[in-house]
Length: 479
Image 1 (cartoon, helix red, strand yellow):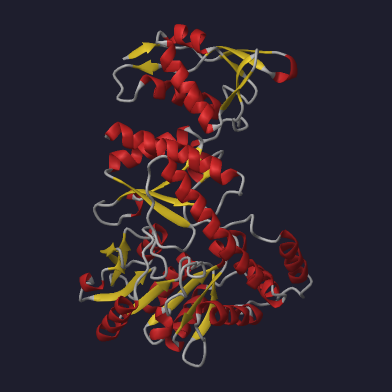
Image 2 (image 1 turned 135 degrees about the vertical axis):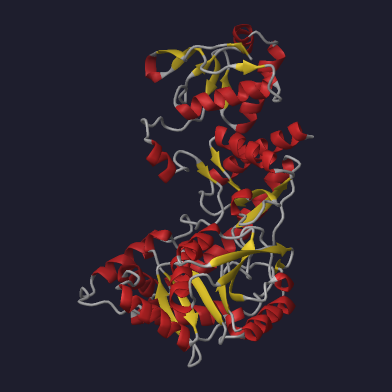
């Protein structure tokens, strides 16, 4: 039961838009497991996130707020100390305590709008996002201008723009060691999920068994289900997909061997060979999603599955992670029979990836800007990874994952802990991605897939500190 019901915030606006807060729009609950100081801090953060408090507003003194809430001054002082450490508030000598950070207030959003953009107004620490800050904006504009100077198309090439396919082939050869020769064909795609659905529709039959990593990429799950496949979750361990647990009637296997999503394992050479041998014995396809494949820092990347077995492996990549989703394109490399089946499916359905993004990538590659961008990424991501690890360590938290890619994992003990962590981070203005939602079968691994690419260099440490405080708070409650 709430100790005292508080009315909506009553704020008097003065000169320069500053305000003195008379009442605060939150309550305290002594029956809640959370300490009162934590509830006070959460309430003030929530008021800032909701727009009831704005940057520059003056808060009551610790003595005043303690009297209003009916708690000891020590409780409020502890809450203020936590908010000060997180950068939400600051003191000005002789004039009180002020809110120093708050998102701009937004108008009311519809329920549909909330579902469409759950990250609105939040600092994005979700995995699987690109580093836009690393992208050379001059090169970006130059590529778009060059692409716009081309003569508009009359008909699309269903296989993809020739210049784009050539650029992808060069990229894969130089950066991933994959030579797309007479034994394989490069096609453009509308991204990895779209390619997965196309291959399933073109090369498999409804009801066929497709094995997929668990936990794994939920959009691949959605794409395969949309194509009518029967999905079987297969566990992953510290070496990636458990090949020994693949069902005998498997017709296709979807996996992320370069950097398993979301747990971050790298599939070693021995297991890659086991997977290829399984596929050949069973006449199955392997869909190799090269998630984070370009972002390896500690060692030279292992040979791609497509290099080991181009006859049974379909290699999938996307520009959404290394450049931006703005382009809406990716690629697949497959044996001629698979490529022909995909093209026949496109011809029958009248579908094919949009050419504009392909032309932009072709221009980036032609000028050397794509290669330069990848070099910048490889320099920047290890620095960000180290920063995240150090910030989390300051809260007593350990992160796991190979020295690669653009995300790390913080494990938790239960779904309840994970849910609390997500809520606590959101209350602080931070979006986190929980592992629970990435399971196809019963949930068994809990925690956070924490991405460090999406935010700017200035925003990242702030967001990680807020996330670290939320995670440490949840672990402390449970302990």
